[in-house]
Length: 442
Ligand code: PFF
Image 1 (cartoon, helix red, strand yellow):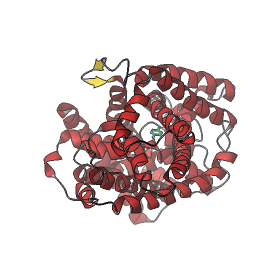
Image 2 (tube, protein in one colour):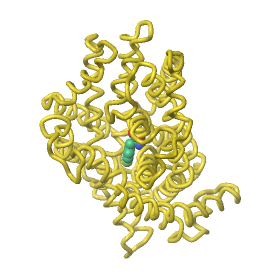
Image 3 (cartoon, helix red, strand yellow):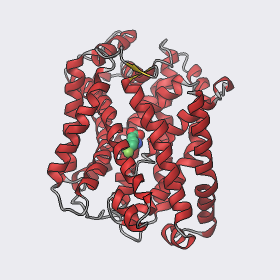
Image 4 (cartoon, helix red, strand yellow):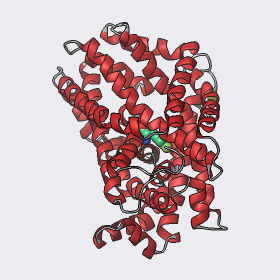
């Protein structure tokens, strides 16, 4: 899309916003975060954080962006002249770039898996999938190459504009991915011993209820909805005046929770049935999902399709991160979209190289006890996104008069006041408390 186009249709906007939201967050990150943090308790906290904290902020981002009709920084500058609110836009741009820097590493893993799946080189003895994953991510050459390829794909789409092709493809690819998940859930749940996985997901083990788990669940609730870094604000700036942003936000949130839970329902029953452990970190989905496909007829073939769909879901998220950088760099200056996309993408590629190497040759380098990859993840998810979301909530809740927010949300009065109460009193207060206690506990 050129810098100031509008979405042609309401469904186009919802698909783009859902495309940004649904990606590795639900399918790769949610299961491993839940696996590392006690399953059920994390899942419960995550869902609460979505509805009470992250969804109201998503609605706020849609409001500010649609009202501004400009890139994230200009939107704040024009709506609050002479005030420092535009710093939210700068911080969002930096955070989105940092997120893309490690997101592209995982995008690269998908390319590695897809390449091997195409050559039918992905089958292993069930328990050897862990070794295969380690071999792939530890190889520095392959990690950086595939990370670069993934960014290249992102650049090519953003430079061409995200309308047309992506919108049309989403209508087929996203439902197809959903169908795949249903089939996988059925297969996983019918494995011997699957019930243990259900117990892990749904029977609470309160030992895990602590400040750190709550902060991680909050970070996941932001990450998965792409909230707090003005990416959704940027997408909404391409939206016409008469769309119902509240309904769109609820759609995006609910779809996301459903896909997250389906990913969990594929992975955890299989984890226990096939003798893996749930707390193996970032490799979880990459180890378990191929092992589940192995249990299906023509699994090798379907695995290829699955990775193509996963790649698509991942790219529709990565383009939203590059889009905010490009839209800000273009601003009102009519700078070339193509050049900006290439320069921005290249810089992000360079920033991401240490993360790509941090599973292999640079695994000995740690920052506050975390690998480089984990440190960037923590900085963006657990620090940058909550801070960004906090100020976005204040802007929409207090800086906007209720006259403005009521007009923007244009929904029935009870729903409007529910949102207003959440954005004024619940979201910012909860974010502040969770952030401070979580950091102390982390
Ligand atoms: N929501 C995306 C996912 O769950 O995969 C990740 C993401 C996209 C985070 C865009 C932040 C962002 F600005």
